[in-house]
Image 1 (spheres, rainbow over the protein chains, first blue to last red):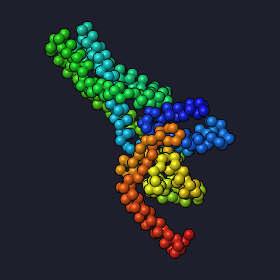
Image 2 (cartoon, chains in turn orange, brown; image 1 turned 45 degrees about the vertical axis):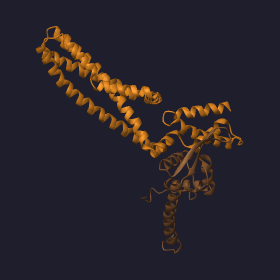
Image 3 (tube, rainbow over the protein chains, first blue to last red; image 1 turned 60 degrees about the vertical axis):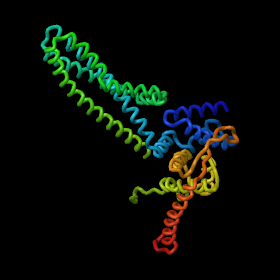
Length: 236
Length: 125
């Protein structure tokens, strides 16, 4: 019996990220009822569980059916991940920006002209983004399962943690880190030089942000397309 | 819809998936019109009525029940079952009975039309 309870707990865990507690209670009651009906059959615990699980439906299909009946739940999850992604990218963007500006300022302080320093900053920023892209690609290619586990754990986070992510996204969007950095720098530089560095770096930033955003959209489209193709291949 | 090359009838006795999905609504409402019930018992009842021809993946029933509840056709309440576990029981509402009448008219219309064709041997089967 304890064996069976362990199996049920494991089954519950596999669905915990996608269904609510009440929904799981209801499904667990159903699973136990099915198992009770199989108790007298000459089957091992594993076999009983296999049959009961099969009758109930595979976890993936179950989640799909629940999502079909209530599409809003899918959107809640999507919006959360969009905001989390936005916050993450914003944060990385700020770090990359700081790094690139640091490079430019160091060059400028060493006597390089403002335009050349801005060009150096552009180069540093491109290099840093390429590094981020390479890291993301390595993560996606090397370990699909790992990404899934992280996603499941994150979906199980308490509500206030998810709230914090939303607040972080808002703060990053407001450009708080960048503004603080600019304020500090504005006091330490001659106004004219500062202006030309910022002018050149703003144009570089604009171009980069457009490219990065378009790249992200393309990646999202490709990923969802791949998931759909995989699902279709699984069904065939 | 099916080309000759792609049509592979699996078994005559098992009802197609699309038809199972479409009939879940009137079936659930009809069983609940007999009296209060819960998921597992409801599925057993349908299985028994159809002689096993209607094969639901059991988990598919709950989203249907939740949807009907959201639409105000049925209501649910959690109570302790005889096993000691918490169980969710479903009951039909007046709106559900009205919907059931509507469903019945629709299904009867389809059924009658098919019967007329088949019994009069209008179509060659």
